[in-house]
Length: 169
Picture 1 (cartoon, rainbow, N blue to C red):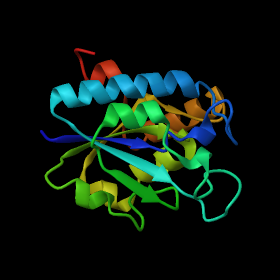
Picture 2 (picture 1 turned 180 degrees about the vertical axis):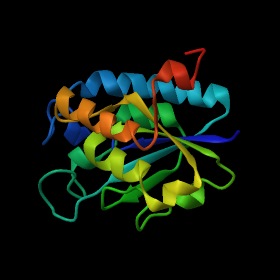
Picture 3 (picture 1 turned 135 degrees about the vertical axis):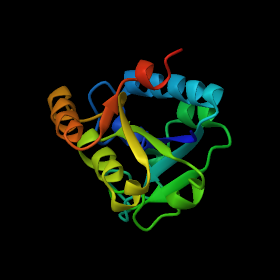
C-alpha cells in the first residue's frame, strides 16, 4: 500500500509571533517533524503544502515571513515537494495530484483543522484515495474548534492518531 503524508500549511503566521497563532502550534509542529521521520522510515511519500494569500499584508501574505513554511518542517522534509495553494482545498488549482501517482492512501495533517485540513481531506479529488486525517498532526485556533472539526470528519472519513498510522512510532 503506497501512502503519502500531506502536511498542510505549517507556516510561521500560525505560531506565537504570527498573525493568527493557533492552539498548540509548536507541539503540533514537533509531532509533524516526528511524523515526517516515521513516514520516511515506512517508505511513505511526504508532500508539503503552503498557502499564499494574494494581499501584500495580513495572514499568509505573499512574500511575507509569516507565509514561509516553518523552518524545522522544511528541514525535516528535505527534498519533499512543496505545493502552493491559494484556497483551502490543497487540490484546487494546484499540482498536488501530480505528486500522488501510485498513491493509495493520503495521510492528512496540518494547520487549520476546521478549514484547510477539512477541505483537502473532503475534496472531490481526494475521493480517489483512502483518506486518513491524522488528528494529532492538526491544529486550530482553539482546542474546541479542533475537536469539533475532528468530530465532524469522523462521520465521513477515517481519523486516527500517529501511533495508529505508524504503530512503531
